[in-house]
Length: 415
Ligand code: NAD
Ligand code: MG
Image 1 (cartoon, rainbow, N blue to C red):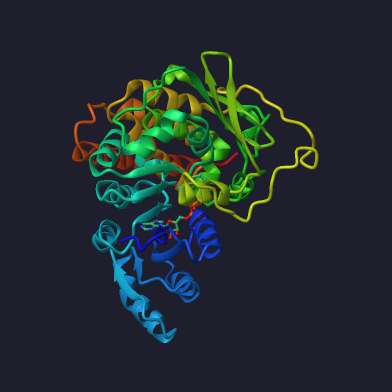
Image 2: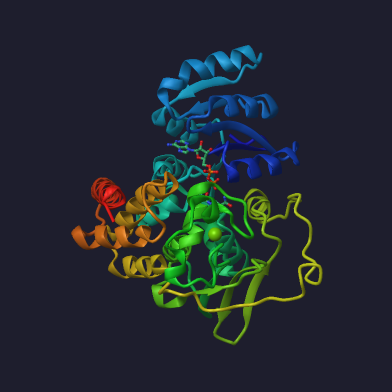
């Protein structure tokens, strides 16, 4: 329910990197923005602390066994925030009148059902959870159209394209079926290249999770940081752009840009290219999402190109050292359930890498093995996609277990 100009915002993934940035922007605009629902995965202590600071009407913890801890924590803090637990409670709050705006910043496919609920209920949807688009892009975009939702992409590249592409804004304004891309030639997503840019494949064998999540330009959660190091993040973003902007693969390019100041480019048929530039800080994209079509202060300073080194460099991505980007291009070309399977298997192998069960190079190897072992199907329904997701997770888990066994065998072998 919106009260005049005041947006009631549900922040899903409130304790994460994007959630923290969203709450920072919200707190700067008490007359315009209010955090009315805060949701997190497991960390009750961090969620209660956020409730103390932002005084939402509702707090939701995904882990149902944590309900009592949440209720007692809110009570002990003297807050009248209502406690909730589990996915159904979250979907009901997102769809109901507790909020008119939803920041979808849960990590992974776990964010799909709440993102879908926001789209169906016609909310303003600040969409950071790219995995939901990779898993079920057609269904999610259709739900947003039918529900009359306004999607503002929060991924910095897609937010940049949204700002540069009139058709994307017209779609957001009017719920147009598919943007009429008259005059558009192509879009180019920029990529920082991650912490291992410039290395060859052989030089990646021994990299550690700590090195992989030490991103040179962005401070992000662990999963997306590893995805940035493998370039899978850019691959997921290509698929994300395909769904968000209704563009075929041939019109979506990728360019490595180590300074991370140009957030993406849009080229038109007359030879014009528009780009959005800014410091690498997600609060800019979030402020666009909250304020659009107006502009809101985000706490991010203006860009001083001289202070930033006076140099903007670009290079082609190295698909040999970073095959995950190729796998994503192939998944988009294959279509059907293949992107969903790639995304699911990626969540499994990235988590295994973060737990030091497998090495960095096993990430693309196990993904490729998973995809070649499973048969694809048309992405007819949510049930089909969720089944494909589950199948890919099971298969990838088995491959991880086998890889762990064979490493421990060879480590224990004499000689
Ligand atoms: P993060 O790991 O920092 O935070 C994830 C949040 O999701 C946490 O609040 C966690 O409690 C919550 N969560 C996890 N599992 C959950 C579940 N099952 N149910 C409910 N909540 C759950 O991740 P992040 O970096 O903030 O990324 C969030 C999303 O935004 C990802 O999809 C990522 O790809 C996307 N994104 C992030 C950035 C960035 O700069 N961090 C940029 C672009 C896109
Ligand atoms: Mg991005």
